[in-house]
Image (cartoon, rainbow, N blue to C red; front, side, top):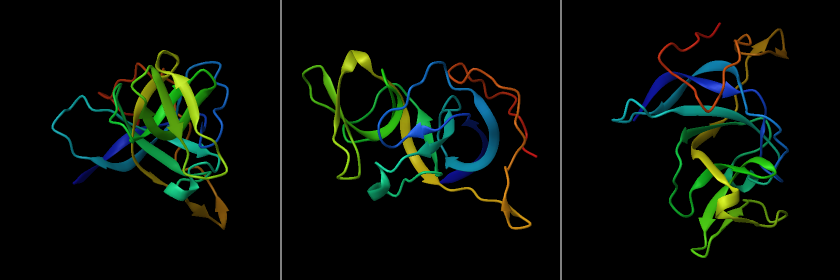
Length: 165
């Protein structure tokens, strides 16, 4: 079951390809009313981030899609995840090898798996779903919400969500 909730959309794309350089924390760009899974835990946080790249295309995730993920620090093997690597944030299938390393697998044969020491990565969340938001006005793509005041993403509070336009 899903409920509609105003969730933050981060200000820079996450890669579905090779990790992109991230020199500072991501910030909230805007809020969108989107469906999220109903959970028993009111502390569960859901975040959206725009994808850039084609490494996950066989999983139905391509450039321009918004990946909605549930913030967490631990994952089951094989989970589709948002992971911070030394090269930046990426969306991949997460597979620990039990020997201190993690494999991040693409869903596109053109991209090699990435191998990282488990101490070099940070799990940001488990992907719930992806979608592409389009709003047409006079035949042109427009933003669904005005830019809101930027807040620190990792210390996000949900008590007073910013309403969308």
